[in-house]
Image (cartoon, rainbow, N blue to C red; front, side):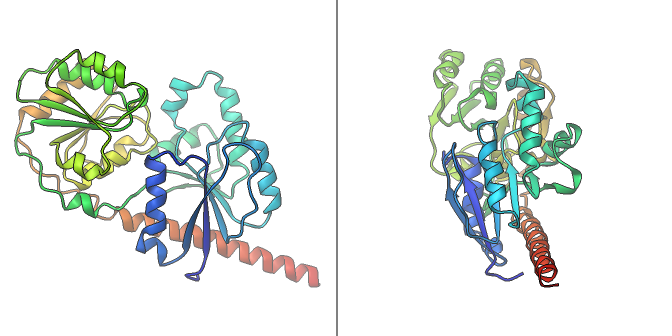
Length: 340
């Protein structure tokens, strides 16, 4: 595959977060740049999608019924161009907790996914849900776990041998389950323990009220560099109610921080084999997990997600190569037929 292969990534939400960070990594990672040129183009959330000049299009768009007509028109305007979609949002637990009309929702996903040459799940947990619900054919389904540059996390100092600071990093939103974490932490004894919550979001006032003035719970606000937050904590807790992947868990692994997480969707995959997985969202179970993690000494995890970036680049290389070669063969066959 030529190094000049042009890959255009379409994005309709530039809000800082996991999707934009993964795309920044795709654009700037030297491993990704060896096999293709990656560019990101912002498009409107609704309305017509633009004409695109590229060898392959990758959608990171939000899928809904309002988006489907523009996707149909876009596919019709680019009949021979490979088009893939990365599903960053929808999961089994997202659907269970947020979608009322599930049959209608699944119909929308099947309709939209059928317009793409491939659909990329960001975790095996998400892919299993897609298979079980028959949202996309097995031939077109691929699993590429998300990645960002992790060397900065791997170079952080080791956490304290006796854990004292539990960190929670993410948007202050129902999804992240920080309300569960706060209630569980407040039941822990020990004035030397603390919970540091990094992030902002719509649930901040509610979470502060749940902390009920506990001086051990600190709201740290927005942090520009995730490395700074992880270096300041000894353990990372992620009681997410849904999570397609979970970049914070991956970064914590790279930083050698033990992870305590819920077992939803793809989170346990990103947290790695050394993570403590809490089944369910019961406060008692989370209190027990926090108690166990802080009551014993710990050693820095040796996992460090060492092959994450290279695995990510290799998986994308194979996908791009497969699609662009197939497109070239199809065009060649069509040209030969036309000349016959």
